[in-house]
Length: 168
Image (cartoon, rainbow, N blue to C red; front, side, top):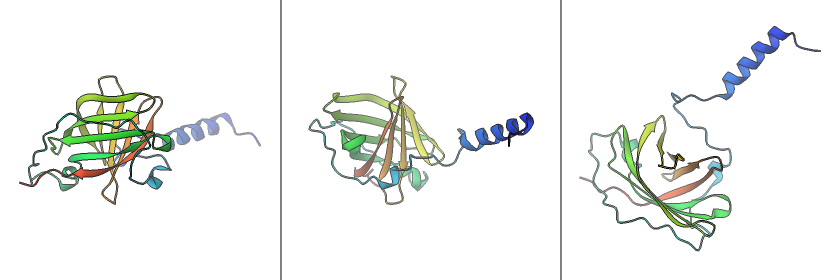
């Protein structure tokens, strides 16, 4: 049985509305496989290496869920753990933080982005590199962190905190 044009239009609008997320969303929708990723070493023989980073204590008045992002994080990203990843999150405030990023892979070699200012948006920390690629970081219930390098050829991974922010 065919739908009447008006009913088909209403159904299409409802379907589009259900599929879209907005910037005001309080939760980010990670890919369905993300929760199955486990922390560990990358498979890359090329290792990520950040330049020296100074970790300073966050103001204790800042939301503890934001402070949890701070520190040095290591892990992997992309299919078969192909990219070695190291991230430092410093200067944490309730609005955002500074993020330093280094990666290493057989395909692309060792690479660092200049530090970026990222902003908390719902339950994630988001920033954009100078090349226009987005970075999305999200805390997991187990204290590890999801990561997404958000470009046309996006990939995700997982990080563990190897050096938390010092306490005041």
